[in-house]
Amino acid sequence: MRVFAIFVALLFLPLASALSDLTVYAEGHYKNQEEAPILVEWFHGEEDQEQLKDLVEMDRDGEITLLHWRTGAKEEGGGFPEGDANARMMSHAFNQTPAAAIDGYPDQISDLKPSVNVNEVEIDWNIELIGSTRVELLNITATWTNPHTLNGATQMHVFIIETEAVDAKGRIVHNLVRDWATQPTSFYFENNTVNEWNETISRDHLDGAGIDLGDASHADDYEILLVMIGGFENDSSQNRVLSIQRAKLPTYWQSVEKSASLTPAIFLGILIICIGFIVASERKRELGLPRLEGSWTDKGVIEYRIIAGFSVDIGELEMGEGWRANGRIKKQNIAANTTHNGTLRVSGSGNLSLQLAVKVEQLGDWILDLNLPDPETND
Image (tube, rainbow, N blue to C red):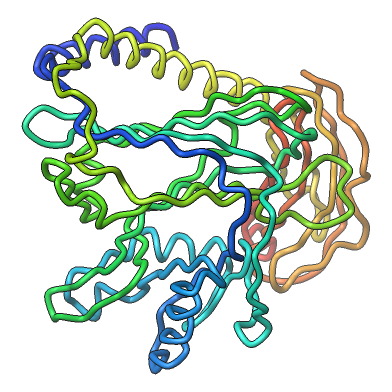
């Protein structure tokens, strides 16, 4: 892993030299938004114009925070993005559109009750647009103190939306999500811990999402939403939106002094720190995550092995379609660096899949998958 980090750092040396005249085109500083309207994600579908019109009006009136996902855009043509839209749709397990998610979870739009919620996590944050002849990097930093211990499922979602997007066919979509990313393990979870969080997005990534910031003169055509979704340890309620922070991108005209050039050494130092953080996080995950292995030992009997890295707590077992378990994998704690063996009797037909929920020390909640071929083919 160290060799890999050094190799990547060396790859960045020409880039650091080429971008030696980088300047901060524009910078925005944002204090915590104490309240935010409820989050509504709308997945575009046929004949949804009236519903969408109402949602746009509610967003403009400050009754909801609206995100518009344009699924099926490739088939329609016109140039709207669909990659992240389809990924987000899959994460919500939607099978058809139009569909809606409210406060991070699938819900019926008819059940929507517009409201303004108090943000439970107070986040101060900054945006920097950095470049030479045009914007090359979008850098977002945020600071907050955990009011309670966050649970392992807590994530920070970054949405970049275009306030009024127009495609090649002249169609207009308000609050179109151009890019979406999550960072599930890039901050501390413990109570009263100060977090200094960072997300850097390159020009290539922005171009791929159809985001053209140019020289930042019209960067305020886009907005950033930071949405923390999760919960606190020992909460009786389900995971929810803990904080929504929303702001337009700062423009060139709001820029700091352009003489504030970033030197190659500073830029390279930031890159190396980021690389080191990524390598350390991946190494920790590689060593800590458990593995679930198994094989058929007899018709209807699976011999399974849970190989633990860090200490792991066993949770619920779910069987794939066409199968059921005639027993269960005992809920217990498996010590670090040990292997737990067992058997599970199942019944059904076809290829078998099962998912086992686990909670891993330091890494939070995960799902382990086991897929086996139809036992009939082994006869």
